[in-house]
Length: 108
Image (cartoon, rainbow, N blue to C red; front, side):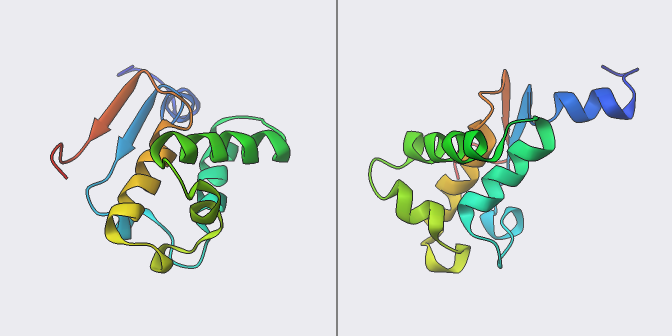
């Protein structure tokens, strides 16, 4: 991996390795709905069609939210609690089922 070119690194990031940032306020764009943000990550790392991206984003949210996943999908970050924003960032990180998940603060 140290000798990988830019294209190879882009394929690895997000697809095989994902990052959960400690501060969801830094990781989430304030003017985009949560579902769209997860879909944008999926778009950047895969060639899924729009319906497949939406389904995969909804599945990722459903895996971390026992209820309210559809509401979270349609919400802006400021409409969520801090804990919900953190779970949304986790959903974004696991949307590809990465081999390695890096958390910059394990206890957050």
